[in-house]
Amino acid sequence: MNQTKRLSMDTVFLVAVGTLYVVDFSGVTGALLVLTIGAYAILDSLAWTNTLSISLRRLFDLKLTLVLLAIFLVVVLPTVSWMFMRQMTAPWQYIHDGAIQIEESIKYLLQGKNPYTENYLGTPLAEWEYVEEGTTENPALYHNAYLPFIFLFSTPFYIVAKHVTGWYDQRLVYLLLFVCTLWPLMQHATDQTRKLGLLIVFGLNFFAVSYIIWGGNDGFVMFWLLMSTYLLQRDRIPAAAVSLGLACASKQTAWLFVPFFLVYAWGKGSHPRGFSSLRRACPLFIVPLLLILPFLLWDAASFLDDTYLYLAGHSESSYPIKGPGFGGLLLAFGLIGDETASFPFILFQAAFCLPLLAFLLRTQLSDNTVKRCWLGYGLLLLTFTFFSRFFSMFYLGTIVSALALGCLSHDTGRQA
Image: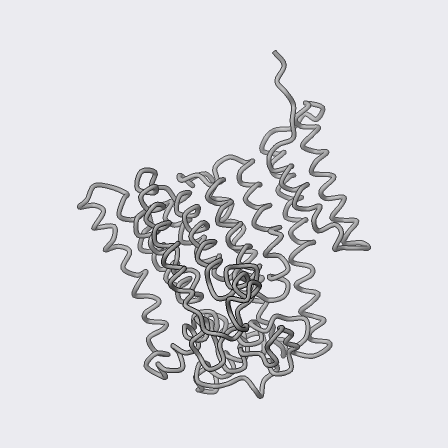
């Protein structure tokens, strides 16, 4: 019986995802993107129908080259272009306000000032165009919600870039880590189709690409999360714990990965060995403590106000309720007065997230793999952010990437 010839999964992914970007590009870039997607589909069709005699390794190398070219056209080239356009116009244009705030945090730190104590009124952030219904002033001018490792890690890059080129853009760091993420990402899968599938879903993630170009920091956090599970696959628990600790010292959403990491470490053997593995995971708590504690001691009230109360809606100028989540529904039905109102979202988060977490961890114990860690993280993050005060669309970028890893990765991770 003749085997049915079909396009491979990675080709379907690239055609489906890549087509979404074709309408956003014109001229040379758009033409190159169409040619790249078309060449990929034709190459796969010829290989599957045996019209083209080619080894699987050679086919993989050609496909990989085309995927990387698509990522360059969709992500890298626009990001670099926006960085240069910003340098030619003004420091508050062509960039996300969060990236501006990280840059200003670096400057404050180098001046011996606390980025959580200071306001950002006299910085380019004050000139950034803030458009939010019901709010006239950007609350980020008074609050730095980002945990310290992002600006601590970026400080050496800032110093070198300013010395060598005279200018700095926070996207230099974000873009570097985005590119560096691609290799450990592919190592989460063993077969070539899944490697390419992961690369396509992550590198051309529809919900994440614009945020990367704009200067969002989720890619920064994802690098450390991916390095953590890459090291977990190789049973390097202390190093994996360090990497996850760095992610937890970068953004609060990384904390949701911790229970899955601990269950994975504990469940890799008998009970004595499990507790030994947990002891090896101690850097997970030590690393963020070492990075965060100095700022807590410096000004605990400002740090807690910026990184928790501001986001939870309990500060003088809290983050507004917005997005297509639970908060948006409450606003739409008139159950909340306005975007600045206080509301106990944490009760709903606990009511939905705790039972879900218990179920996910119990499921993971019966199939204790990195794949389960990512699947659990993606589902928990989706639930937690949906019931949070605000549900930004860029959260879906991380969620989609996590779920893709939960579906396409293998736990061995040994194959290069």
